Amino acid sequence: MNVSREVEDLLRELAPQVLGTLARRWGDFDAAEDAVQEALIAAARHWPVDGVPAQPRGWLLQTASRRMVDQWRSDTARRDREVRVAIEPDTGTASEVDDTLTVLFLCCHPVLSPTSAIALTLRAVGGLTTAEIARAFLVPEATMAQRISRAKQRVAGEELSMPSPQERPARLRSVLRVLYLMFNEGYTDLTRADLSDEAIRLARHVHAADDDAEVSGLLALMLLTDARRPARTDASGTPVTLADQDRSLWDRARIAEGTALLDGAIGRGAVGEYQLQAAIAALHDRAADADATDWPQILALYELLERMTGSPVVMLNRAVASAMVHGPAAGLAVLDDVDGTLPRVDQLRAHLHELAGDRDLALTHYVRASGRATNVAERRYLDAQVARLSGGPA
Image 1 (cartoon, rainbow, N blue to C red):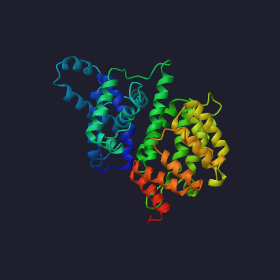
Image 2: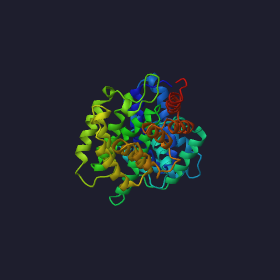
Image 3: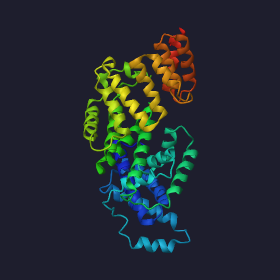
Image 4: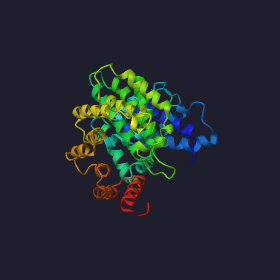
């Protein structure tokens, strides 16, 4: 199906709105989500040929409603449901209420694992098909279908409404965590920029509705980090380290927007982990070149972030900052306390051993890192380091 970017963006924007209306009307989130997916597929097939209808949300709602009627007609309880639907407004008239945030909060419910929440969010709010999500996570479509189905079943009994003021802080933390993980999934895999873009789009929705400082911090972090995307690979698709990137390629508009969000968030309440990470990203983005990076300040922020979160990933980043401030031996000492099975540990050890002048140990760790690479671009980069240190062809 050849769908223009404009139509694709419109479908993603409308999907949660239609889902919210349908799920509330029928009281069945699982069936409503399936019906909306079928309506989206129908739109992707017909709109490029017939043109976008004058009321696209109404078109989707009517098409999805027909799918629901067809699906439920044979159910033993159809009479009660048909009575309930009969007293609702005409299905061709779409409510003007935007249910995007309501559906997002449901998909990021704390009862779901982060992986399940991301998958359900991408399907119900992002409008991606199960096949597209499966490709993003490198699992068979059947596996992803089961994961999404189980997630929908777990939230099936939850009311489709925004959380109460008492519940909202905890639910908001779940939403931010899911969007953060979604962004990282897309940013780490150099071929999945669409996941990062979707995370940014949804973070903008949350930010527009909530002036929480951590919401601003998360959106700032995403923008300040994603601004470097154009320089992260060379012409062949091989990753380029931050120190070696052509900073003239960085997206200055995103850096300016992210910096403004961060400046507005600081001082509006307790400083949280996303604001700290955004502050670190801003220090990198403000440096004219790698040598101008304020590594002592970055190290101080990572030390504070580690005390706040206890995250082993933060400890990895603190090791890099320690090496840049105090030398590679200091970075390697930090790594002694890190779980050796974590991603990037061998690659970081290799880099620090090379900085310390031990090419043999660096080569050993680059070989290990290559064997544990999770995507082609990463493996290509690590194999090039192995070839460089061993004297073989790159």
